[in-house]
Length: 203
Image (tube, rainbow, N blue to C red):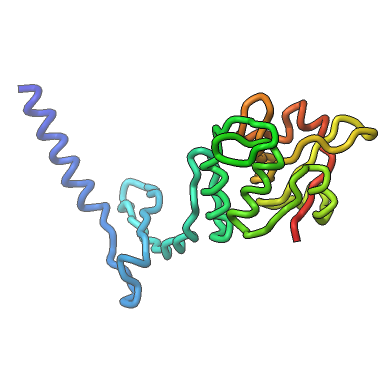
């Protein structure tokens, strides 16, 4: 008996609310379902005699953003189409073991990795050593680094450059490390932060 009363009360309440809450059709005939989205605003009751009003606002749907390439291995998104091939290529090298003096997917050192990527993606032949490679690039400020720029490291001002990698984005770069092969690292990591020397752009 009590259950029947409760269900009846809920049914009456549902009918009452459906009477008060209604969404009006769009006023502009030029606006269709593919270009507009409808949103019900919050309602306010001013007095017992006032009826609850449903106000309709229609807003154009946000324009579809440009397609992005997401690399799971890099865990990064690249919006610019000219960066997609680069991202795909370097991602395939992740996990390649470190091999001094080599530059293949079976094994590579840091400069071998960089020269292989630039040859495959951009058709550019770079110098084979990180030290000579640095002489061939245009020096840029760290704040100006873009995807594809080179990052160089040295242990002290009196020692030559000993390592090179390729900048990705968000302070991340990809390189062939002697202790792990091709991997993504952060310039904020203590070792790389302390030994970062300069950034360069290949013309």
